[in-house]
Length: 363
View 1: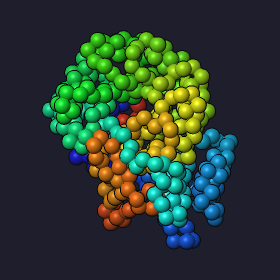
View 2: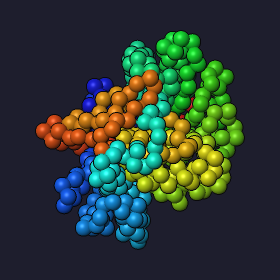
View 3: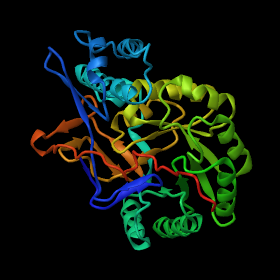
View 4: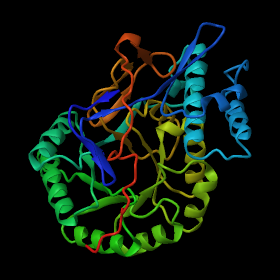
């Protein structure tokens, strides 16, 4: 459980109590090494036979075995989450067996991964928003992404408040600001709303301004604004990225931690072939942080909660605006079974359930 201690959410809904389930999968080996994968893993029983009894060091081959096992029904959505969780656990095992942190095993040189603040903050008051970003600023963060999309006037005011916090912390240096509207606008709304913001603010990117699969719409938004268009966290497989890249619809290529390390590495290579940067997304994106250290086009990674989930310890720190990865073998994750609570059931009103009339607004 990720216990934020405050409401968290986006344009689609809010976890009012701030308690967000964090599924964990453990993969054991006959050599006594256990790998950890974080993220939803529905249909795990259907995917696991692809790796059962196999040498876990053959990670990329096993990843493809899992994908092939879902060939008929397709590997999108929840099934892709199961593949990603198992894949992350296999990379953890492989690096532990080698006695190295994953970032070094993958060929990384720099253990520092630049970060930006992302507080899932749409439900916060102005005072709460300022206080949260003062905490981020104290860790050296000078970039922030706010959740918005429901009230453009409120979005502008909140962005300006955060700009003030980060500017003061940076002794006058201009911070980087981003806005994530979680697919809540139409194409025309996106161009109109971002245009209003850009008369007062310098946005680095607008995230998921329209639906994730709308390549033509994302490209149209990109042509109509100055800010970059970021998307990709909900895309599951390279075949879903290809239409967007072909249409010139994305400027910042994102990938979610829940889809696994191999997926991120392949997305990064595809983006690099198009001269585009990549940016990992996730509440606890430790697997992708290790992978990000090894790719040439990593831009910046999302930092959500400053604390890990309950019962989870990770060998990394946040200093001077960056994740700093440690030297523990594998992902550096240790678990306290006694502290891991049973997740609460999901309900209506959370960010995981799209509102019935999302995006259907006159203003």
